[in-house]
Image (cartoon, rainbow, N blue to C red; front, side, top):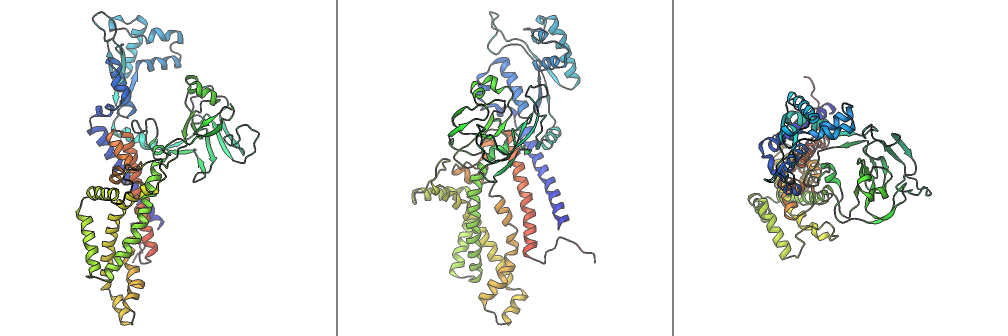
Length: 531
């Protein structure tokens, strides 16, 4: 079995990679890249050369190209010691036109141009955009930069190789003054013992020079023990949840802030806050530009996630999905068994009409039908509210998801049961004097349910992915709705990340389905014996 599972996983991983590559081709090559800036408020406010430069920087952030401003090149010259800090201002100053460049700047502009053209970049020079009176327009300052499109294979390789991030004490640049780098193990987590006088036992591993301040910690949220030594990076969101990783976007709690009195370790600063200090990551220079951070923190580990009242996107999808799966299997299998047992009866005919209705009517149509009937007749909530504690808002999404799956399970359970009725072992059972009820429940049922067991792991696992149409109709803030938001906002990072997430779950579901079938049916074997 081990070899079989390994082969299936490898084939599945290859399939997932192919799916992601296809999606990358679609979003990066076949779609107009200008649409990704349509909803960017910063882009709409900019003018002239500043707008063009910002456009290139956003294309780089979205993974379309490599963008190197001349100012970054000058900064590298200073770091390498080729020019001094005092010379920077003269070298970095670009004239309104080529003719107006200073002698010092002209030399290094020539070097910049030769260097990046030799590496396949296109070097673009934007002369100052001035009015008739000679005054430079807002955003019209001269600009110089180099750009080069990122090949699809390179983009894909970078994405997959950077998927797993291993934190280390050299994450923060070596030239940054952060004190002694290293990992510290403590039995008394400063978050729970902020003043140092308490002795609340809470082991933790704290890093300095790492991306995450807390590499290992405990809290009261499942799974209770958390680690940041190895983290998953599915790509960065740029519009849906700007600057946040896709996986974090799916796992972060939603809703209103949960405020409580907090004492910040080391500084002793006290305030009502929703900050989750265990999620702190390094943000270079954050205390210098934000006085509030300087009061709260004694280092630049200031970027934190906040505690909120609602579940995460995965959480909402899983709660709705898992309840739907339980209901669907209980009702679908039991009704399908009864239909087969009383074949061609009035009960069987009524249930068949229901199955035909679900198959024939488009899903969007009956979802809106259930929404209208549930809201008007039964007065059930038709829109989801993140902060609401009303359990009734779960009813319509669960029903909309459960009814088609119930019909599908009814159909296949009835078919498998009827197919088994004509088997030889059933005839032997009848000749042995067993009643039809005993034959159905003790023999036919066990064999008919085997093919259906293959889909159980997938149904449970895909509860986490949410239902795209259902979540959209009922405004459920789940993982399925996340994909539609990303498509509408042209958030390529989220589209690719969610696609990979779905593809990976599909592979796992198929493998677990095979294992479950082999467990239920001893006739199935994953090993081949030589004959």
